[in-house]
Structure formats: C-alpha cells, structure tokens
Image (cartoon, rainbow, N blue to C red; front, side, top):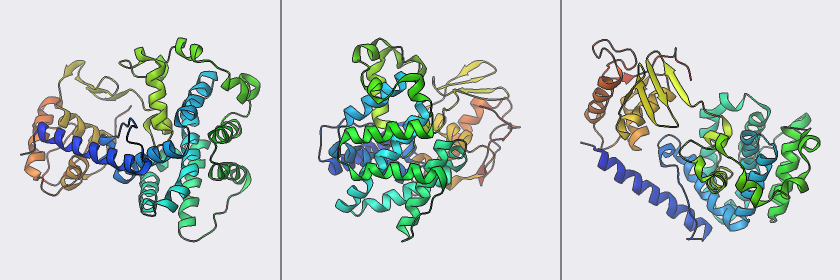
Length: 353
C-alpha cells in the first residue's frame, strides 16, 4: 500500500532528478532551485523544461540583475501578472534557440511543454492581450518546428519583432530594455507618463524596496520576509513557461455549498469547521477541484498523483478516497461532491472560486 512516507520519498526523488537536470544544463552546482514537484505530476514536460531554462538563463545572463529589474518595475506600478508573463516570453526567446543548438534533446521538452500549455491554459490565456500574445508566440514556435514561417498581423507583428531582439543579444541590460519596451507597448502605453521611464525604474533603490510592504504579492506566511522572498519568487517565475501567479491571479478561496478550501492557508472546512486532511487527501481534492465537472478515471488520478499508474493499485486510491469522503461529505451514503464509482470520480460544476 502507498503510504504518506512512500509519497514523500517519491517526491524527494523527483526533486533530486529535476535539480540534477538543471545543474547539468547550467554547469552551476551552486544554484538554489525550487522545482515544482507538485505540478510535475500534471505537467511533467513543462516542469522539466522550466527547470532546464532556469539553469540556462543563469548560465547565459545575470539572473539577479534581471529579477531585480522586474521587482523594481512592479514597485513602480507595473501589473505583476502581465509583466511576469512577458518576462517569461523574453527569457524563453533569449535562451531556447541557443540552448537547443548546444543540447538538441532539449527541443523535445520545449515542444511538449508548449503543447501542455496550449492544452491546459488556452482559456486562461485568451482572456487578455498578454495571454493572447503568449498563445501567438507558442503557435509561431510550433509552426517553425514544422518548417513553416509564422505570419502575424497588426500590433502582434510589431510585438513579435521586438521580442525577437531577445534572441539576438547576450547582454542582460538589453533583455531588460526589450522587456520594458514590450510591457509599455502591450500592457500599459501610458506607463512612462504615469510612472516614469526605464531610467526611473532602475533608479529605485534597495532601501526603497526593503521598506516597501510586499503583503499584496506574498502569502500571509511569507510576507514578513518581504523583499528577499519576493525576489526569490520572481527569479523562479520569470524563467517558467507558465506560473500560477503570472498567468492568472488564482482566487484564494474555493467555495461550493458547505465545502470551503483556503488555498493560501491549505485549510479545508465544512460549514465553517476546519477539517484536517493528510497531504495525500489534499492533493486528491485539489486535483478534483482543478478538474471539476470532468470525468477522471482511476488511472488518470493515479498518474497525476503518483506520476504513474503502473505499480500502484486502484485499491490504494479507493482507500484514500474513502477517507476523503468521510471527511468532506455530510452524508457518505449520498455523496454531494465525490460520487462512489469503480470507474471514475468527479466534482460538480456548480461551484465557485
């Protein structure tokens, strides 16, 4: 039977694998990395490619200088989510082709990661201009992989031409200029008038950043660490193909009838009374909520939670599911959230976040 201890060991092994991959690519074994092991179960190629890019960017550019610019831009008034998404495109354009020329095998990770994003995040990305630009970029790269010449029109063509400058430089300051100009054109054409030009952004001092409260950008348990914690998060997000904070400001609370989940505090409550879930139960519940309204087969859930359905019996899953039902269902004999089935599990769609 799969236990919590077994799961923890599996996560540590995955984290070690991801770290070793990044260190090998970057050649820098002193890098402090924070692989997203939880997301690996859902988007393995995206997580692996993200970590490869972390190492590559650190090898080719000044990671600290670039992340500090992003923090200063946010401090100066930039919208964090849109800025981070553009930074992800700039860093991708800056390292991907150079990285693939040195390590051709990386191209497969990049292509599969792009497909995962197009499959999982299309609806989210379609909601704003920055997200649509990212979709166009990913589609364009796919067409290039197929030997075609991407075609863009209007403002998109102008933005893509500006973005391509990132692949033509080895200078971190030039990447900063590209990112800044791209933000001021795509997201906020009035930014310079309202908040100042790039020189003004770069003139922000460490003292000013340190004194600023980053409460709105960090979870409650982290904001006391302030600037250092925020810089660390930005440094990771800027080289990700996707990130929760950058693509969509996730709502802090999931509510459906009497079930409430506070994502920041990792708290689950029934009718306002907190219910303790084990890490495994919490992961299963989160998977169901993220896919609410969909039919999830046992094999799919096993592969998403454990990374593979092989070697893990469905009986183990049923044990965890039974325990989860007892905790969140008022009447386990007449389940509201998790119907009993030997073939699939689902969560109702009439829920809100």
